[in-house]
Length: 106
Image 1 (cartoon, rainbow, N blue to C red):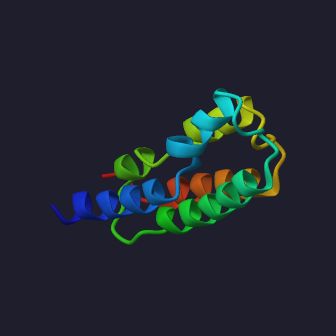
Image 2 (cartoon, rainbow, N blue to C red):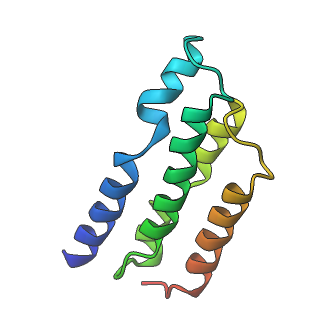
């Protein structure tokens, strides 16, 4: 039960600043450009929050997999908001891969 609470806290933390929920729709509708400075600022902040959320105590490997940032990063890259070689993208992927590798399996 405590592990479920840890993953729910992490998900909640990530969702609060998620640019996909509100801002990406604006890009798709043409109301905002993928290169908009405000969108980039929100996205940069979200990358940092996501990285911190991954470090939530008590996450097991299977719960950590639920927090895999790759699907969301792919959407942001495909829409032109981020690039595959963006420093925040590479850092978040590296942190996730490292945590997944050193987190014991259940």
